[in-house]
Image (cartoon, rainbow, N blue to C red; front, side):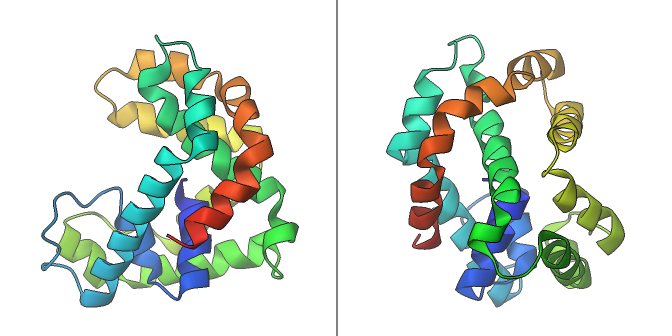
Length: 186
């Protein structure tokens, strides 16, 4: 699950939005440098990731990815899950996706204290809202893959593997509602 799903689950669980985003940026078990509510949300993010990664539907979809591309299969499936959630949003939330994204982005951007404590630049609300909303469109997922590749050790391999995100994610689609429900209980 990527940003949209983590923020959706954080809201449903009453967790801090910044921690839902920082879960991928903060390393290690010691989270004492973070505000307590953010640290708890980072822990939730990690439980969600663990639930998603170990879920039978995720494992089955990952097993179908060519072994040469499987190294980046987790990234591919995370992004596919966000795209799926965005395209099925009305079934999961009573507020329109655009409203949710604006609210979540503002909540994340407002926690500069948490980003400072994590040593990570805080996103601007406008830019982060754009990122969240973009996952509803295939081009938004393609842009996300390019952003991730810029930070990757082997960007060409990541681009090649994740470029097949639609085909890799398709076997996961029938089980994603179950996966998301299980992640909500993480």
